[in-house]
Image 1 (cartoon, rainbow, N blue to C red):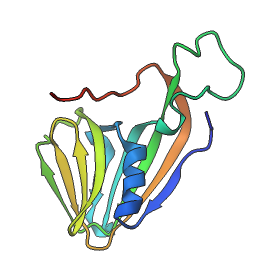
Image 2 (cartoon, rainbow, N blue to C red):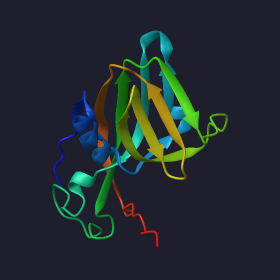
Image 3 (cartoon, helix red, strand yellow):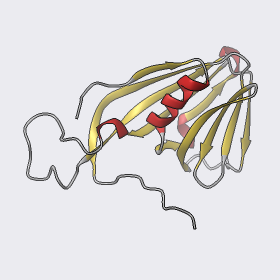
Image 4 (cartoon, one colour):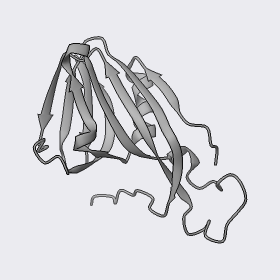
Length: 152
C-alpha cells in the first residue's frame, strides 16, 4: 500500500467522478458536517475507505495479523466552496449521533448532490463550485471491506 495521502481538487463533473470514487463508502457522522453560509462553504470530515490500496500489502515490516486486517481507513476532509444553500432529503439532522454512508458525490444542474445509503441525500446549491478533498492524519487498519449486494 502506498502511504501517500490523497489531495484533490474538483471543478467539473469529470473531476467530481474521481472524488466520488475515492469517497465511496465513506462513513460520515452528521455532527461532522456543517454549512457555513457566510463563507459559502459546506464542509465535512469523513472516515474514508482507502480503495486505492485495497488488496495491496501494507508498507513496512509484515506482521502476523496482516492477513486479518488487510484494508485501511483514514480521516478525510471535504470542502465544497461556492455553496449558497443546502437542501436535505430523508436525513434527520436533529439526530446528531446518526452515521451516514456516502455512496456518491455528483454534479447536478446548479450544484452538487451527496447521495447516502438508505436513500438520503444532501443537495448543495452552487452555480460555481469547487470541491477540495484531503486525507488527514495516518490511516489505520480495518478488517471490513464495504460491499454492495446486487439487487435482483
